[in-house]
Length: 456
Image (cartoon, rainbow, N blue to C red):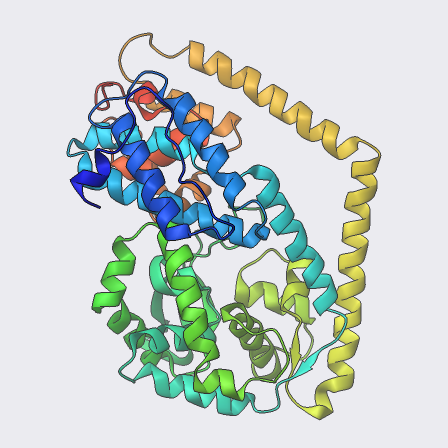
């Protein structure tokens, strides 16, 4: 973005989106919006800049209000990425840059209602998909292709192969997961397991009870463990792996996830996949689970319990288990697979019915509202106990996080750091990304917590 573009902001008026044609030109709209916002916040916050940016953002959202909820979410991530890049480029002072990012991101964000609808639609789709199973009779061919990609020249295909052969999620393979060979100690040394690795870095659990977030646990692999770990290390050291490691989560998910999905669908695996069925990176995790259940699971364990063990979600969460019950691998497995599908589906329906009954009776909403009220009151008390001058004491920040229902696990997931690192960063000398995540979680400006570092 050029300096000429930055200088087009209006001094007194709220930033104005471009006049739109019937087609929403995302690239042009982002460019114009960023050019209008930057002069409002750099080199200093202009009067009423929050109100002006918020008004402009509301008008901008009207331009893509006819899009699907998923597209709206994608568009918002692209606006946020462009703003982040521009602010990073134009604000040299690190402390003030965090302040600016904090303020702008608090305005330019997804509407809660959109996210709720996306989650609800996802749950509905899981129940719809569970009405039938898909035969992947050529699963051995698909696994063989992935094994070949492990040692190929394409870093994208190497990463996709790792998603299938380990059953780990996109972001776990590309950015946050830790993978190592699983060694069993014996008297004279250790025996390395050929088809088992140790994994740490479970995401999407929000630190929920019974999940394996922050835990190191063994997972079966569909390729020799040594090859898997070597492939992970090779990808992470590549130019692509390094660039992803340095990128924020929004950008990785909004830019790389669609790109990797396109590569997968156009690849040999895409051509080998059952036709006329949903197919994405998420499908690889479900296929992995079914293959492992067939070849590795003890004969006396139910599918949902085994899936919980290898995928890391909490045992007894039937809706999550149901989302992975998609495939069977041989015609002879059809009857047994159908019995398991019906059992898990019924358990998930019962789980959903119980939740809805509690909600309709007012118990769920009352309990939630009461928890929020209690947490807010206690958080206010903790806030008053903080010193009136200087930085908020680390123990007070901890208490406010706890009372606000923010777990250290969720902060670790968001920042890509471990729990102990997050706690060490509660002081002013801590890292900017952890400070930003904590401030966002508490709904305050980062300077309110560490004024000695982030002076307005």
